[in-house]
Image 1 (cartoon, rainbow, N blue to C red):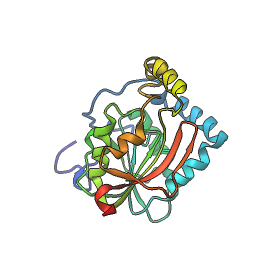
Image 2 (image 1 turned 135 degrees about the vertical axis):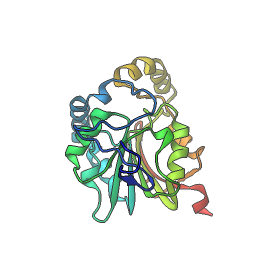
Image 3 (image 1 turned 45 degrees about the vertical axis):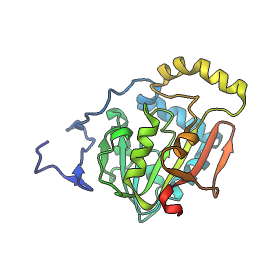
Length: 228
């Protein structure tokens, strides 16, 4: 893309996911597995949503406000659910997933990039959405620090994640299965204690709306300074 002619989002280059132009992605290599095969990932998501995930996904997206970053948007399942009046950007490292996200939400800009190095200026967004994402981010803390950086001081991080089990025997099982699971899925870490990492990355998890069901979690987190 030529430097001066390239469209820009919040001060950074905008890389459109379209068959005619591959995004200029310079992040880490994308680990290929189930989550990087769009039709298969969508099929798995559809089954999970039929068994209750759809309701939690609607909650995740319904609270978005203002300028929204769908971080790790994948095939774009969150994007059609966004409330009216929001202005969204989808970001994902997988080119194939971004192509499907573009078909699902043709009016939303798509950016190829990694969570650990978000190509946006500070305080660019009012809401960051993360739906089943940080189990797969190679450096979760770095990605969450980046999410905090691009959020405005009154912004919110809304998360839907599966996390390390509270029961010791389940956690040990997750530890044993993690290497094979990560390889098959293309990066998912079932034993990651994402809630703890969120709190260690400059956020406070709010009690309102926080729910747990088995290893699934949903919550809203505020940048620590905003609570003072």
